[in-house]
Each structure stands twice: as C-alpha cells, then as structure tokens.
Image (cartoon, rainbow, N blue to C red; front, side):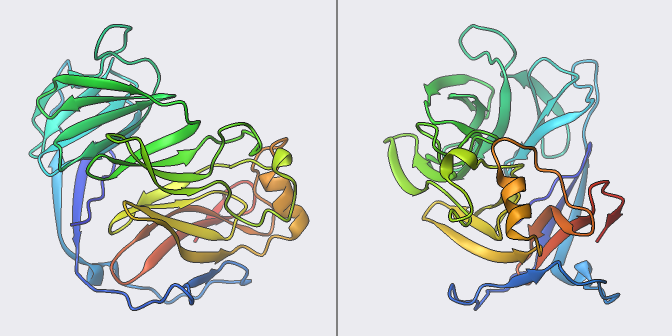
Length: 299
C-alpha cells in the first residue's frame, strides 16, 4: 500500500494495482523542452482506491509549526516540527502518544535531526543525524545509536535492517568517502548496492562536481531519487540501484556544468523547465516542474 502525507491533515491514498512491463533497456522519458504543455489531463481518481484523512490531535505538547520531516508506519505517524523539542508520535487515528528523540546529549537524545524513517519489519523508528542513526521501539523506548562515517544527506529504510542513503549535497565528489547513492545493511555493515557518481561525469572533473538539491519520493518498493542537473531519476530499493525514468530538461552542456558545479548554487535557467517534485502510481510517473528562476509558473 502506498502512503502519502500532506501537511497537518494526513491523507493516506491507496493506489490501484498495476504491474509495469517496462524493460530496463527502454526507460520512460519525460520531455520538458516543449514550448507549451498539452491541456489534456490524467485523472488521478483512476489511480486511487481510497483516501483516509487523519486529523492530528493538537495538545499543548503536540502543537505543530513548520513540518521539517514526517514518516508513517502501519500503526503510527511521526512528525518532526520546529515547534517541539523532539519528534511527535501519533497513532493512525491521530491521537497524540508521546514525544521521543528529544534534543540533548544523553542516551536516546538527539542533536541535529536530518531525516526520519521506519523499519516496519523490525518495528523500529529510526532518526538520522549527520554521521549517526538512533533507533527507537514503537513504544518510544531508545534501543541504540549507530555511528556512521559516510557523508549522507538523508537515510530511508527500504527493508529489514536496510537503509538507502543519499550522498551529501554541495560537497565536491572527489572528497574522501563521498558517494551519490548507496544501500547498506546496518545490522551486518554490508554494502548491498553503491554508486559513486550519477549523471554524465564527462562534463567536468570530480573536484568540480557536486550533488545538488535532492528530490525524492517513495516508490512501490523503495525511494525515487533525483539530483538537479542530471537526466535520470533513480529507483533505490533493498536489492539494487537502477534508473527508473529519464527527464530531458533541454539544458546545454554549459548550463549543466553550471548547475552541477561545486562552486555554484543550483539556480534554474530562465526559459527552461526544472523539476520541483514527482511521485509514482502503479500506472504513471507524475512530475511537477516550474519555468524559469522565479518559479512563477508550474506544470
């Protein structure tokens, strides 16, 4: 079952099943170079079996401001907000249960949280910080913290004891230990899949290349990942790292160099389209893009 969460009201959408017969040798390709987009619409209602709205209980202890991250299990909803000192845990009916992973230096306490994820099979809630991951039971009990020297930006559970990691952004790719995408077993410390680089490395040397602005969304069995300035959206799951679909933005080689340079930001180019977000249903990939650097028009 696919779960999607929106804002403070949680909407859980169950998509209808449909197996894709798309071979790896012929990836779907989305063209963002057209001068205009067609007015035809795909009905999202055809993709959804049901929607469940879950209003989250707001008490003095569970007030929510800006949502920095959130994740769900079959039984619980976890929300990391700027309003609270820690992560708020709700049940799937929205009842507030407790605050865990509070800020501090003691056992079970956290510093700078960067992402939340759930190992459903082991019934573990996982909190990622830079270079460490803390594990809690679904009852809020602190289990352990694992130190991790890899320079990642985000971690996502993609199977029992299995983490997908997205490499650190804005760091030159020739920095020791740097990588783009990896899948690791945290219980055995084994590497399941690994990609040092993604995209066309012929454009510039590694010391001038960095990952820019990760965009990611859940896939049917893992995480779809995209970094600005490349043409491939990657499917990262418990078995491997493989291309899912291609995006043709029409950027020239010089524009791609500028976007991927470790010395510059990842500003959009006027007159061209850039990816804002995407998600997958059993029948389609949906990509939201914007035109120009001021993000004034979305498609």
